[in-house]
Structure formats: structure tokens, C-alpha cells
Image (cartoon, rainbow, N blue to C red; front, side):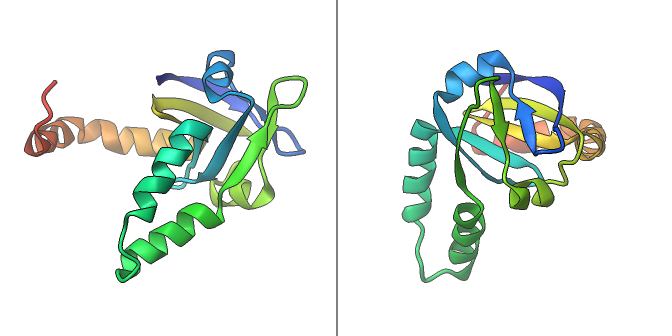
Length: 145
């Protein structure tokens, strides 16, 4: 399971160091794609396969399903580590997530998220204010803390 929050920076060539404990869980190759809320989602190959199957099960007759599948898969790229434990993120993904220098790397259960530091701080501040309300809504999904 991925968990934790780490501060890192991306270099001029688009390379970023992922925390060692995340590298172990991601394996030798993994998938990075556009995520929600203007961040990147990074999946181990096994989790990517699960996501692929879930998205394949959506009806192509629904425009929202087609749109989300296009968004998710068209941005996806298989990544590998360089000898220093860095990953080179493609320009289109860096542009989407506004990754230029300071980044935040989050462990979120089955995936890693990579955020622009300023966007993460804004998102966290807004979410923190409504955390209790969000938790109450989760009860509707049979979720209890």
C-alpha cells in the first residue's frame, strides 16, 4: 500500500526522484497518466491492469464513459527508472499537472499521485476545511472510521 507525503523537485529534463519505498512497490516498470484534480496518477502494472478492466467494463454507449476512457488512456505512458532511481515524465503529463520545479508525491492506497506543490497546498487547504463533511458523506457508502 502506498501512503505518505514527500516533497521533491523535478529537474530541467523532466526527471523526478520517487521515494525508495514507493519505487519498490511500483516495480521495474509502471504507468503514469493524467489524474483527477490536475495531478498525475502513477500505478504499478498490476493495479493498472485492474483499472483497465474496470474501464473496459463501462458502456461505450455512454458519452461520459468514452470521454473518461479517452482522457485516462491517451495520457498514459509506461515508465522505467534510470540508474539514479529517477523517472522521466513526458512533457504532456508535466504540462497537464503544471509540474515545473517543486512537487509533492503522495501515497494514496493503490497509487502514487504527483502534484505541483502550490496546487497541492491549495487543494489540501480547501479539503481540510471540509474534511468532516466529506467523512459524513462517506457513511452513505457504508464506510465508517
